[in-house]
Image (cartoon, rainbow, N blue to C red; front, side, top):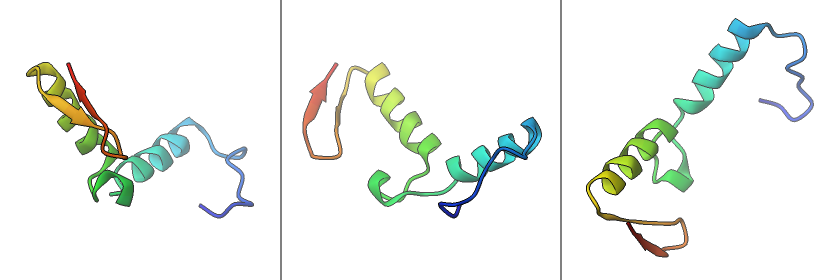
Length: 62
């Protein structure tokens, strides 16, 4: 979305569509996973007692 764009004229349904399009887009900082995929991977690791790493490689064990 261009920097000078405004969301002010959008209704709730339009905002939901916009949010879905952003959240379904793979990101470089997520190793080209979508935010939903990254969250599901993190959740599965935490639920199984595994560990996860932050973007800078710091390990976290739960």
